[in-house]
Image (cartoon, rainbow, N blue to C red; front, side, top):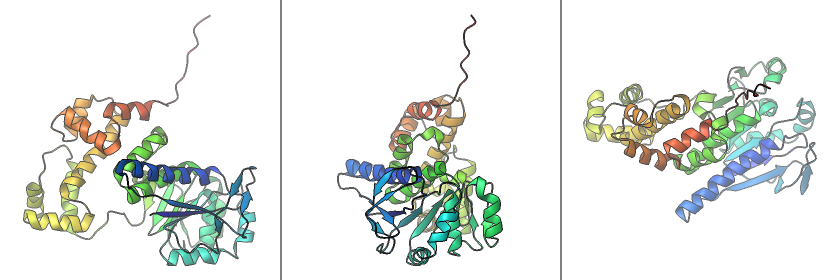
Length: 334
């Protein structure tokens, strides 16, 4: 069962607490309802001084599950965004920041939201690593933490198990990425559709990735991946892809799975679905044309594969991602 913990301080922005918690809770519910015995999720709100509740500066009062000293381990630790200047939180943080370092050493992934990147930087974990923060804090952050490689043009950064997101909005993209890792792509796409897909970028699009999650050192397999990415609409088979790599089909299939964690055909299908999502969102091509461009033999096969992957038909997905665009209403002439 995935475990996530969010540290609460009075200056925390509630939306950077509730949004990741609700996305993870929704993924767990969808997993259980689809499979009957799917995974749950353990989500803890932890404080700093042993209190049972905390009142945020916004006036919202939240119950706590314990404090940071009692937290034994977690898969993901989130440092919520800090309202305004992080100075007050930083002044009180020195007593508990070493626990952040310990959790990371024990294997926890850590994500800071907005100006909470300063807390992660204070631990020294971000030294010589990429990071981002809220745009309003760029200059102060860069002056205070010169050892950190600040990425001003990226909303999300990743280095091993350390993540920074620049705003509350970007925490949604980050959480969908983690849902995909924990619950699979189908659940991730369903959660993404539920939580305003028209406002989301993919994690890979928004993020500066120091080490790509799909990175590997098998040059022959990388060559086959590049070929599929350049020609997603072509007819591919394990045999044809193996020929590109100069391997037998059996050796190619084994090495591909070892390098990527997927079979060649599953990788190709996921690639085609991603391409189709981009075309549905950003082009006016007919569904039949998109099906052809993405390598599906018929519109019906495309629709079925797309719905299996996202829980939405191509038409419904296009309506969802375009349905809340702002428009200008022209008043009728008097």
